[in-house]
Amino acid sequence: MPFGAAQTQHPGSPVPETPRILAITPNPSLDILFASDGLVWNDANRVPNPRIRPGGQGVNLARAARTLGADALVVAPFGGSVGEVLEGALRAEGILRAVPIGGQTRVFVEARDTSAGSLLLNPRGPELSAGEARALEAAAREAISELRPHFVACCGSLAPGLPVDFYARIGAAARAAGAGFVPDCDGAALAASAASATVLAPNRHEAGRLLGEPAETVEEAAAAAARLARSGAASGVARWAAVKLGAEGAVLAAPGGVWACAAPPVPRAGSAVGAGDAFLAAMLVALAEGRDAPEVLGRAVAAGSAVLVGEGTQMIEAGDARALTRLVQVTLQAG
Image: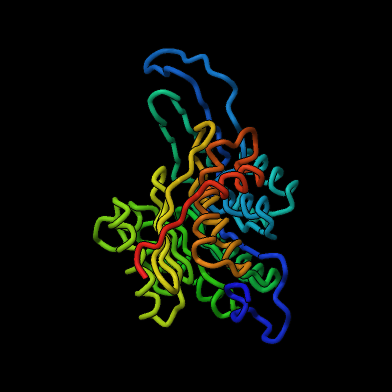
């Protein structure tokens, strides 16, 4: 039986064949991704046209989940001319429930020097009024009731004006409806919501801040993932916990042990923006399908790596993810 099936809202009803994932995204963005050789400061840089695509962690997660075979829906606030463009793109994909706001949706910019690294410009985003915050929470609760998701993922930074326990409140509604809860965030928002999480998948830096101990190496990350999984059991939650290690792959603590998976080689190394979101999308899809822990981890690492070879407005291609899945190797770290 797929992960989460016993937690669905309608006991006794058949589990949907298609995984259903709801992504709550309080701070979406329009992503503009430049790439060129030899960028320089204090001079004009003549660069190729950028990739322009919908962005924000929950938007990335939902788009990747759709590509990987899930039904997915985004609940997010949109405002201003940027919001109109982004909302139109996501409505065309059929994955959006929008909440109108007075502020301007943010623009995220990556300037990547292919020989030196990336500069990421990530605005804090528009401030939501108290009424807009209430409307966003109400839309999230309504979507939980209507979509009947396997998982509700609360993704990314909290827009200014939202309370620090915003994700925790959505998580309580998700759990009450029988859905798994996934806080994919950092800092105070993660600390406020982690105790009731069904799935956790922080990167090494987020895990270190949450636990107050390093999670930099594979060994440290494996210990951190195991600790996060144990803390779920202490809270009465059956939890799967991954720690993402970027180019080094990831680790996963689940019933039966802790596994590690190195990232596979990729034919070209493009932008990594959204790789962690694709990782989580593949992880949730595999869990909803009832895959075992090694396959869950292998699929997730492959999907994250597939982002590096993505082009155009698409963040990930299903064929790339499948091809890279055949190259990953998952090893048991601790039984």
